[in-house]
Image (cartoon, rainbow, N blue to C red):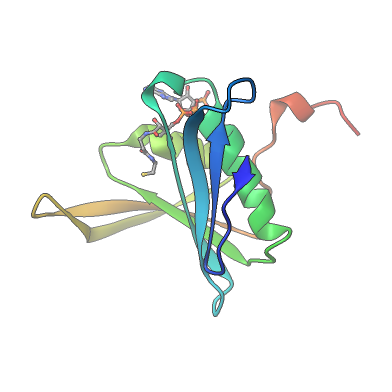
Length: 133
Ligand SMILES: CC(C)(COP(=O)(O)OP(=O)(O)OC[C@H]1O[C@@H](n2cnc3c(N)ncnc32)[C@H](O)[C@@H]1OP(=O)(O)O)[C@@H](O)C(=O)NCCC(=O)NCCS
């Protein structure tokens, strides 16, 4: 991942290692006062279902609780996007409920499904790391 970090954001471009082509992005919008950040991510259609979102968001979480010293990371998705929730639970984030009418999309209120993780809670394991010491 290539860091495009800012004072209040840390956004990483996800690029194909062989070609350098941009395949997605993952990053944090940081609130330093409360030492928390909101996690966001997307993967280009042609690159989905290869574990890239899970791998990238896991790395971003480790960065948040490591180098950035944050206490909490949260994320949300629209109710019709359960795949996004699957990514979040795979990296150890817990469902925390639904915020009613949290967004306005196409002129309509839309609920947000909220997930969160605190720094002492385990980030979901990378299966490729299993058996390593
Ligand atoms: C949500 C999104 C980031 C997932 O990216 P991805 O790289 O395909 O996700 P992964 O390959 O890491 O898959 C994560 C899990 O979701 C499952 N999954 C992914 N796409 C799926 C689909 N279309 N249908 C069913 N399951 C799916 C995977 O099987 C995997 O489950 P597992 O952990 O049980 O094996 C991608 O679809 C996307 O960019 N969507 C649009 C933007 C978006 O929703 N961003 C999220 C913020 S709201």
